[in-house]
Length: 270
Image (cartoon, rainbow, N blue to C red; front, top):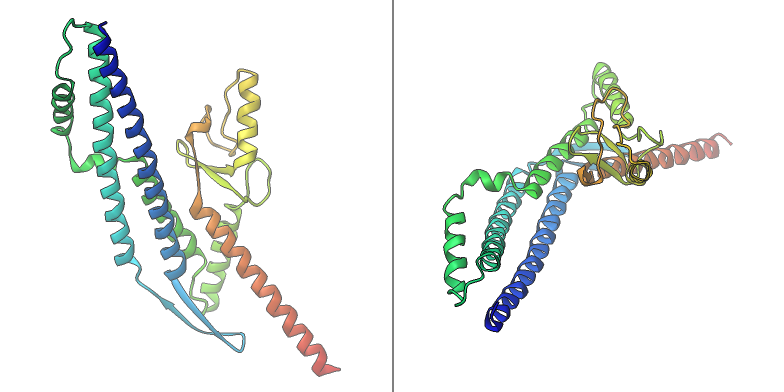
């Protein structure tokens, strides 16, 4: 291959590296947008105001408009990610073509890349954006967050509703327990294949051990048929982590109030 060709291909390799760095910025932006949306749902799913340690109001706030705005931002990020991926693919295909054909005279690389990029872009559809992995994670976590906080925000004016709420809370707390450690999870991760959650360190340790033994890992959740759990299939379950933290805060608040009431009663009685 002529020296000029090597220089041109080296330049393209450098461009390719820069583009891939840009992808990391897009991923970071999508992660931040997801956390902001979860913050909105967590903080505005319902408002509580206390007076003299008595709940006096519970107001539901519609967060749909703000979350919708963030969803639009996520779709814009997904569009940028798709465009960047097409540029990367077009450059890689051009480089491989040149190496494969090894022409005596270097063709117009810019034209070749643009031609391949345009062909890829012509196949775009809106559904592509909604299949973006981070967009799907965004939607999944919002759904889980709302579900978790609905479990914690029932109306307890009627005794039967209180019983139902207690059952829901108990079921929710059961979901907080890792099927491996049988303890409350601190860093839950979800298996994208079967949907079950585990303590991150516990499942990764099992995967590493089985890998050394050259064996597959069956999902530790009783009754699950998934027989090949992989580290690449695990994603942080931010919604569940927030629900666990919120439940613990409420439990501590209840204990503190109970302790304060007992102390005040004891002081009055004595």
